[in-house]
Length: 428
Image (cartoon, rainbow, N blue to C red; front, side, top):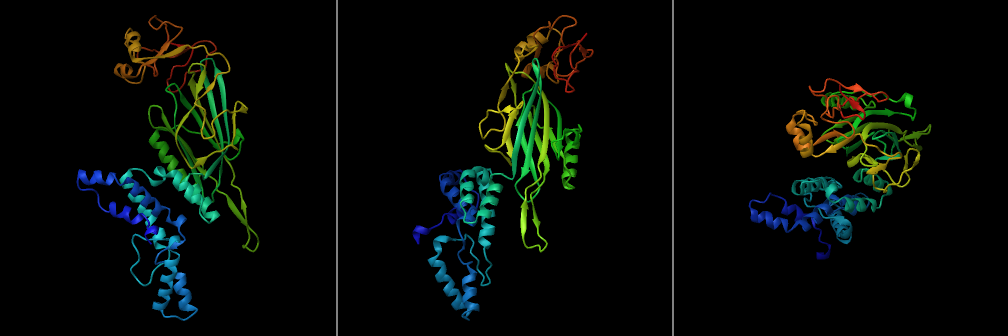
């Protein structure tokens, strides 16, 4: 029986109480391999074992009810069976003490306890820390349906990215970029798609739409709201299960995009209600647009930090301006896309040192806030028009008292609502 010793009891014992001294903490750190093995075995018990020791009630119930054996004798038969089948049975850390034992209590409760202990010690979820091991285990279980459902939950494969298109409209040194995605839910519950991503400081998001069809005229119109109000609206809409989408700027360059609900798959039953036919979920369509300045001869794309519930593979249709996108299979989007037309820059990003040398002539801050903020971050300077001459370009990210207003040059688009420098704009 020594060769069948399972590691979960040792891990639970080591983490029963927090270390009381630096020496105990150092000793515990030396046992991290044992901790991972034990906590993983407990967490994956429902996939690795058919039942738990002391909880195989069907054997004792069979001998008690069919062969009329007394309960004590039936339990003896069960114990014999469990000793023979022990390699297939999970050894509970907290075995049941009562005679009226319940089935699979250990396989239900101890995986949750193992996940809590892992989070408390390693400061991250067990799925994050042991993802590949868990994915391999849940995909190898004896039940195909259980394996598929568990794989979806662990590896966040609930929503499939059916199609992704990037459309770029170039305007010399800046561009309008549209990201269009089509999602299909692979589960029978409503799901939410979440992206955390970064954009360069020159980018500004200009629109977000959801739709139940690819028809742009029928997509839901977006509204601009302060972040707190937008979050409240999103929560209210998700609560009543209507289609909201939300994009928030959560940092200087960080954004969060959320879409809910992605409609679930359904089952159509026949007239008797006994035979059901799975029906694929209806797709959900999303459009996101932003404007961005060129980076050399390329257009920067959103850089993915974290995704939730959505996945893609080699069968996902991925296009750029109607042509096949060249991208690694695991990547969400390319880092950047090459400009079709030569880029002629009217603006350039300079270091804080150069900005202060140029900017102090007019005592202007090119970044939001004060000149101190500009000294830390740098700012935008024009390439063509002289910064220090009357009537020169106003390079501020937001209009300042020194800038008496945005004046449009012939043939130029209106200024971007976020106050970012727009090519070919100046002040008089």
